[in-house]
Length: 302
Image (cartoon, one colour):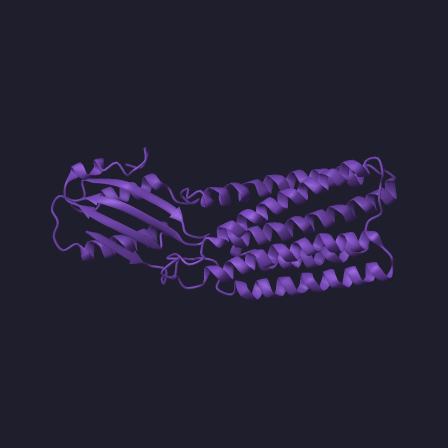
């Protein structure tokens, strides 16, 4: 007997519903800044300003990537795409992590070059700190509930940190004359960003590979299912993220005495949601304990 219980309509502290507004405001602010900085840089023949505008354009693309994934994830499933496009949020988080690491590599490369050839700080960097920091604050709350939003937050916070470091280094250089401060601070910030981004990359790769999402302990889920009335064994237990906010589960429950199980299954799926945050659970009941040897379950979850 199979039973599916979809609890996605219940309130389980997921990402705020108004993230679209945050994305729209963030994209607008950053795109306006890019256009103004690029335009001024072209008129003033400032290569530094134009280069910084190109760098900030990467922030806009990162935000659009995360926003697009969030929008696609809300689309209804179809007969061909039975889970819809929810997985795009995982891909967007992974892409943002990779983009951040590439940006860190570019920062480190530039810092090493500046050890020998110090360069002036673009005047637009100071204003960019406020734009980047303000945009990061828009995603401050949602970052704990949605890995995709966390990617956008990390991207903007990292850029704000880099800009702040550049300004602080420039002020210190003016007072001390130590030209090595700028690249040294840049390398230190690059190291901090790498450490922070590594967790984002690891979590997004794990979700992309259908690993059990962070915050869910599979042994506790299995123990809960094994403790259900009449259940003597659990096998073929799989827990994975359909998106950065929705978790799915499938499991076979061995229950020798089978009656009308609708009430038990509905209550079980409700508990899986409330206790573990699993929104989409599909449970199959089997009478014979020998069914556990069906050979479908990989080692470690039978």
